Figure 1 (cartoon, rainbow, N blue to C red):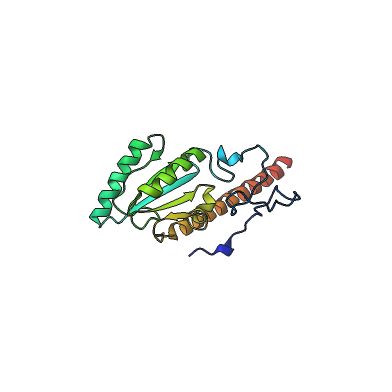
Figure 2: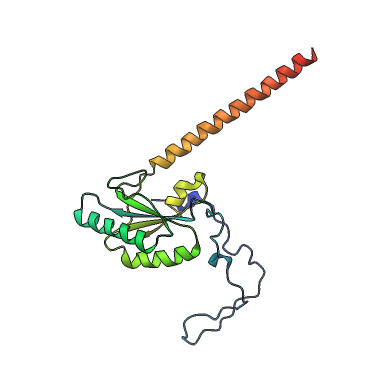
Length: 202
């Protein structure tokens, strides 16, 4: 389970401070509130908000799981994979795996979403058409936040399937080792520069 307190969260009202209080007036349904209209749609309709990836990775990955030893699920998943490729050819759709791969403990396939319009079209469609399968929806930000993106920022359709988070710990350890090697390399270059400078003065 994700430790919600392991992360920091900016205020949701950042950029909306010191405004007039919101009205208490209700719409005709008597339940929902009338919101102040300013004639400008949120930028989130046009592009994913920061820090979501806007490059070739796509803003969101959707992993659609099936238990590879369950022939009914495997058959349904393969048919769903084909349907998505036919109905949403503009999306990036990866290999149909028949075994666990990466942090995913059961078989799956992956779909990438690049725009809010794709997200808005595909996710409601998947809610209705995923059948007996579970799906993980996670954002893509920076590499150092992969574990957070797959846990605290993730959303599930259907039953949650525990991921093997060890992979992310190994990635962090590798990054630390690479950073340490880079620091050592720079320190060695600095020492060499000093030696060369001193020798050059002699």
